[in-house]
Length: 176
Length: 348
Image (cartoon, rainbow over all chains, first blue to last red; front, side):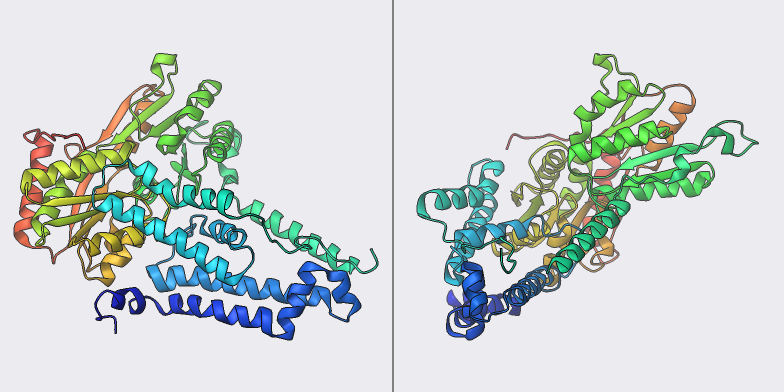
């Protein structure tokens, strides 16, 4: 199907893991907002005391999410070396993980928001590569800055309030 | 819960301590041994201790690997008891590197090589504190002699010559008459390489178009791969580039069966069928010269170059490369070596 004109290369000419990433958006939406586990995850992030009083094992759920998140991050790293590049080099992510963290803020902790942020960042990144390859006369230093500058602008102008979980990074201990 | 948190703290501390132990600055103790423990026959010091600071890793198949390989070859030639080597990898950040340089200089190393243009200012500050130690710095032509510093050797690979020869080869290889170049930043050694490459292509076939892109980084392997993809979509049928991140681009070239032309180190190890040639930096003679100069009492103040004329740059060709193209490139090598070819850099 990658032979289809225009939409072919856009939709069918990528690595399997790219489609897995897209699939993860509806999956995580479903898990976060339609399952008991998702409700617990959101509860221990917003108000762990209330969750605890209703019998949710706060730390168990938190550890589970950390492990799940780490596994997904690991998958992302593996896709870079096994899927995209077929090679491993030390520091090959070149700080891409921090971009991922920034995208979580960017997307306001919502799966669809993160997807949109990621698409915006990578579109501009691809755009600046094309500008350079096609010889648009702007200094390369400015071109490589574009995706980052744009992310900052959108964050500063577009995102009205950062909707982060109320209990983010706060350790929970019963009775305190 | 409290017990669990303490356990976590302990694990964290343990992991920090362990990473610290493997941190590159931990130089082999051999370098810091007092003279009394040195072999008695040679008197106090007939061992040359060399420390190498690398922005990336010794197996980056580019900038860092080239000098490390040469230093190892020199060690094999001189004998392990005559040449001691210590190295620090991934020292891209200047403050880390400066600390390591000072550490090496203070621990009895005779020659500390700072293998990156970014280390210059730190070196100029450190070198006067250790007048007995020689330092080497590249890519640079500045030795600090104008500031009264006498113990820094500057070295510079003529990246434009490597670029010129690979440019001639690339111009002969391309059928679409479009070449893609994946560069790191438009400065220093990388700029020299791009300028030489463009000159080589132009001298061979003025109709060939070279699309140049920079990633703004030396280690962004993923972006280098993406850049290579973009070049291919823009019609390039030969790819080249410099710096350690090009392994990403080589992978893309391999997947698309497009020839890659390498510089700095022998890159055929990454993809034997894809890499048509590598213009490699051979640092052995340059390192030998520095050590000889030091032995003769010159601790620094000189600029050394890698060129085709002095054998510091050589090209390794893939057997599968078309003979006519290889011949043209070899003619360019000879021309650069005897001075009959002059590289004309045009403003971009």
